[in-house]
Amino acid sequence: MARAGLDTHTLVLAAAELADAQGVQEVTLAALAAKLGVRPPSLYNHINGLAGLRTLLAIHGLEQLYDAMSAAAEGARGEEAVHALSQAYIGFARQHPGLYETTLRAPEQGDTALEAAGGKVLSLIIQVLSCFGLDEEGNLHAVRGLRSILHGFSTLENQGGFGMPLDLNVSLTRLIRTYIAGIRCMGQEADELG
Image (cartoon, rainbow, N blue to C red; front, side, top):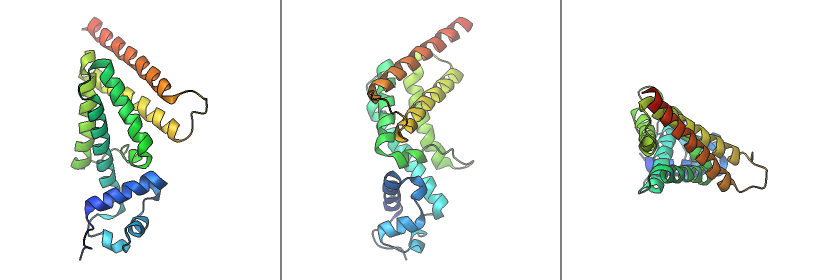
């Protein structure tokens, strides 16, 4: 019988707290059970083992990332929207380093819930980049580029890789401006080839 007050959502939130505080590798069923004050077998009433928990964490992380990026980009267009979306992405990675790490996982074939959560993030970024006039393939390359920039930046920051005494937000703003200039060139190339 499941413990009263314990449900899947509660487990995921507790696991996200553990991931952010100690790192995603430290999220184990034993650690989660200890945090919740239950025995590990009680967790199986709500999740499908550690793999199931990690999938639920990834979905939760992607939903939270989407919400942050969507709220930041709402009402913005063009360069302003790209900057807002980028700042929200980095802000999420700063605030939730462990949960952010779970969002990087590619879904296994047939994992429709994880695919859908990732698809919402992808669609949002494509929507924001649509004003640059890229074709479908160009949009996907542009999304990969932006994701690579933002992931690289957040990972380096999280790992203490930026040792110089420069404002990281200024660096990010300049990096995104450079990226946007590149996207504009991609759009011009498409026009010239078309």
